[in-house]
Amino acid sequence: MVYRPFRLIVGSLVALLAGVSLGAQARERVAYVSLVDRATGIARDTVAAGDFVIREDKVTREVLRVTPATGPLPIAVLVDTSAAAEPTIPDVRKALTAFFAALGDTGPVALIGYGERPTVLTNYTTAPDALAAGIGKVFARPGGAATVMDAIFETARGLGTREGERAAIVVLSATTPEQSNIHFTRTLSRLESSGATLHVVTLTAPGRALFDDNARQRDTLFDRGVRRTGGTRRDVVSSMAFPQALTEVAGVLAHQFRVVYARPQTLIPPDTFEVTAAAPGLTAYGGVARGQPK
Picture 1 (cartoon, rainbow, N blue to C red):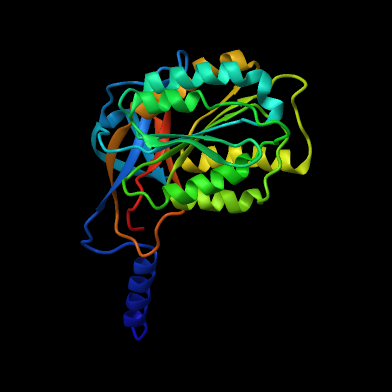
Picture 2: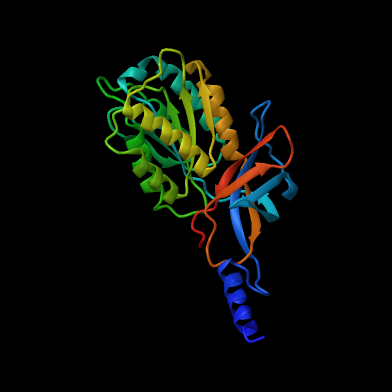
């Protein structure tokens, strides 16, 4: 009987440290999510709260509301304009034309080449004429190698200063020799801190596999960046497949939904966020909204 009060105090402290607070109200959190049919690659344009399962640190959260996303979505499109990418440039231009058309009024959109060094071809805009003019500037840079890790780092830094709950970086890669001057871990950290989702379309044709350290870092960045930000990755075996793949990415971005879910109040915020589709045959993509307190 002497030790009972002490046990009660310790038990209360343990409960608080575990994030359990008697009578605490759940906090509303926001995520942006898309739902895609795996068979067709087409994103759903109508969804309901029961279509998603959201987990934080593997704990399922209650989905409260789902509405179509309506706020601005800055999208930076990074294209390979290195010398080795020259054979793919006609298909790259076709893909960009299809991508911008499929986006509709989603944006604003910037176009950036990363041959030799990151170069802005068109700054963020929703004007079709400006985007078309940017496509006309897509050329292979003689003697230039790809610098996609540098480009993602600089682009993520710029997006991090823009207001709004969501942002995206789309990479169209011809898998050419990589010569960035930055380690992938720095770029990955910058990408995550920006709150932008990473979407990658990459050429994996036979004979294009590169095994130097820069290539391994680039591929690791693509893999981890897509998974950690809730983005998409599409590997194609021919640049002629760029238009279809990039159109599917546009569908994911143009059909996002603002999902409000509940999180119990805790002393320590969760480390991981995961969204999955509730029904078979569908895939969910997305991440938490930017600018939310932890």
